Structure formats: structure tokens, C-alpha cells
Length: 208
Image 1 (cartoon, rainbow, N blue to C red):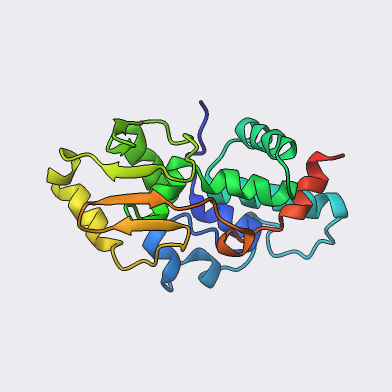
Image 2: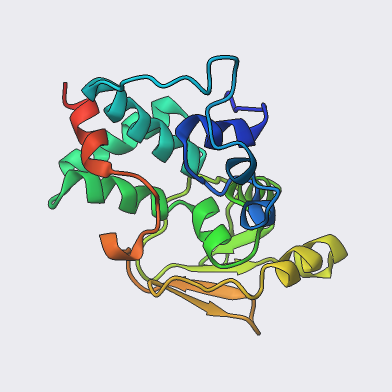
């Protein structure tokens, strides 16, 4: 599967907002948005009037890049959200939030979603006692995510957890620092999701 391998700070600059793709760096003065708050490229500092379609496209791209999801899978999530009861845009964000790599990041076991994705692929986590190495695995209410015992012996992994231990955990998740496990209490409501996107624009984009 294809994956973006370029400079991720350019993605934040292109969207004009922090997408928190570089972990700790995003909270410091080294953040590219803090230093160069304009789009990359020679025409980045020009002022362009954005069309309605352009706003919808940007909202969709912001959400994709925030969660690190490719276009095909993101559209698949939208179709899943449409079939569910409730507000389609909120359903879409709820699906993205329930991904295993996102939950690993929110539990403070990685510095960024990209790092979480890599750690999941390397088989460091279990879901309900069974190893899962699929970052896009969708969790349900009641699922328990834990770190493999062997992984806890890794000094590098210990350093990652220690560096992110002070980050607050969302109310819809429960983290047991001693057992190195986390539980999905329930899937989040919209006010519990911090994604910097306007989901109604994404719905409008795909509904054309």
C-alpha cells in the first residue's frame, strides 16, 4: 500500500493548520507553522480566493492527513459512516478515532500517529489478548489494548512511553499505567474528538 514519505511539515503548511504529525516538535517553536505560516512552494505566500469545492477538498485532505489515511480507505470509511444511524460526519470521525494506531497514540504509547502505525505493524500490541499488527484495525467499546510483555523489555520502547506519559488521555479511553493496558470505554462523541476538521464539508465533498 502506498504511503506518503515526504516532509510531513509541508502537509501542515499546505493545510494552514497544525495537524500534529511530528509529535513533540509540534508543541515547540520549531513547528513549521510557527515559523512559516504559509503554503510551501514559490507561490505559497500568494493570496487566492478559495472556492466552495476548494474548502470541501481541503477539509477532506486535512482529515486524511491528520489520521494518516490513504484516499481509498478514507472513502471506504465514509461509505461505512453513511450506512450507520446518526450524523454521517460524526460517524466518519468516530470510525477514524477507533483505529488501533490512533488509540495507541491517544493512550500515550507513541509520539505521533505515524510512530504508532509503525509500532503496531511491528507487532508490539495485543487486542483482547491477541496480537494485532494491522494499524487500521477498528476497535469497539469494551476492547482492551495492551503492550506485549516482550516489547516492555525494549529500552527504546520504554523511552517512547516515558516521553509521552504525561499526555492527557481522552475521557472515552481508560489507561492503566501499571498494567500498560488501555480500554475503550465507549466510542467518542463529537465534543470528545479533537480533530481540527469540519466534517460537514467532507460529507458535502463526497455527496456531489
